[in-house]
Length: 418
Image (tube, rainbow, N blue to C red; front, top):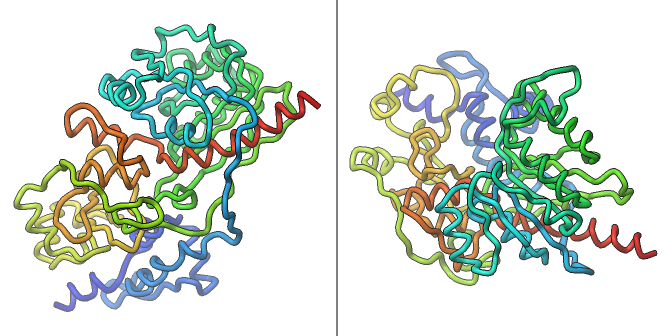
């Protein structure tokens, strides 16, 4: 019993870092500053954190994480601004940009179910289905204000000291850069996962910046935008890569963060984000053996909250390995932002269990956590619907980025006139 009590009472450095979404270095600094102090675990003598301390901070630190607040990033377009979107997926970014007042003139996507979703919801959108390599976009030359795209992260092969466009041939970033070169917009926006920062020891991102420089674009210092700061009830992060055409002196400014943090209750219940409770919809189910285990996990709990014998059986060999594995047997709480959604709602490594009912989130709950409107319907089999939502840029984050684009374009065209 002592072992079980100790296991529940303390969290390792890795577990705490994952729960709070902070680096280990940040936690060590907080320890030195007295913000979150580590203690010695009685049995192992390792430096750990009291779970009660972490839970207290977990509930409050979002509210105090940023020093400044902005009431609204809203900007009204002074002209009609046109967007060409690449790797459009199910339309998360496109809907967000549309909400900011930008008009999508064409969207390219290879996945047939995502294309069905785009056509179902926006019959007027020009959806170009197929491999981007098969499309020529020169008809949009000087006709589009912004090219956007969530290109996958692929390593390059380096032919020389400075990576050029030809060295990236065969990768999807090459296609993104090719289209930007063909279209020649004032601004291009690429988005990706945080991992791009360290991919291939940073060389991949360095290569992308070099390529955009070669085709005539200066890259704004890259930023990681945390979705929780942009009216999204989810701890999701996206890397934003912004290129400004070299003949333009107007500066681009990222959207300012909001201090208010929304939680799962805000996503699924009537309130500021939605004017009604989440609609009923289909959803995945747990097999009985897994449901029996998750029935024992409290809201905001995970596998460490199970009895030790159940922990060992459920975790198998992973029980004896290092790391927090805080996504395993994880039940989300109403009063916290959801952890990052994945393409499958019931993966063992990244569990996202409903706070009260022992089941994964439904399709409409998934969509709400990504801030899709309730009338945005997803096509294809259930697994494909989850995949489309899990891969999407949160709509509200897209809208806030859209406002920043509108601000930039308003200033750019105003300068041209005056």
